[in-house]
Image (cartoon, rainbow, N blue to C red; front, side):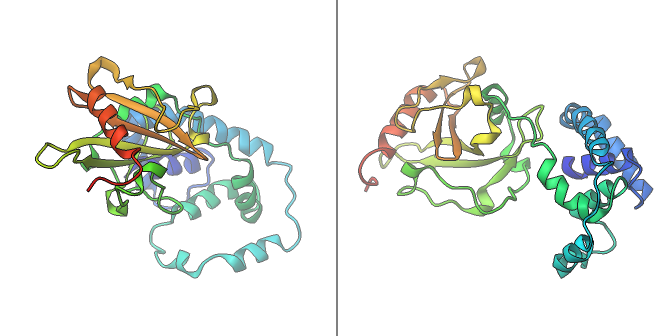
Length: 261
């Protein structure tokens, strides 16, 4: 059981709206006991669940809304009837408070986003094992930085989902390597891709890829740069002993007017 499913089930059970297999609740509780990330996220999610329940007590279901929403549900949602989907579990959870149709609408309208992460939390990406991270699943493939386009193509299978410590936020993580000159060892690093709303406002960088200052990772285990492009924040990390120099060389190469031959 992954973190997402465990927290979904615990939320539903806390409100008395989980009527599926009781074994899954036990499995979710075991996951919570063993997962530092979920133990940190659970108290806040539980608190928001109680607040949402209280706020929705007075909601009145508009006539015919449930039928209209039910008619728009995709048929594919009923394919796996043995195990409720995440959406079905969330609807069932809120349905214990008010009508499920109204809950479906209001949940997305009023459920608060996960707290934005800090740059300090993003530093944990340097320690994450890429091979063990799940594949990134989101609304469309995240973009590459503008200057990277002539040199790289984003292969969806190489994009993994990384959740910074103490946060339910999900960030796209992409490994990369770049050969400065033929016959030399490639420069290797990682690219983090997240929405601007996922980073705390006070730490949103105003720099571009070409002007972002080089930051040292904690413990001197590498360096990174962080910059903003439109609605996206990018962080490029390298963890070699010569990371600051290599990162500067890498950036200079990518900001040239044309790709290297």
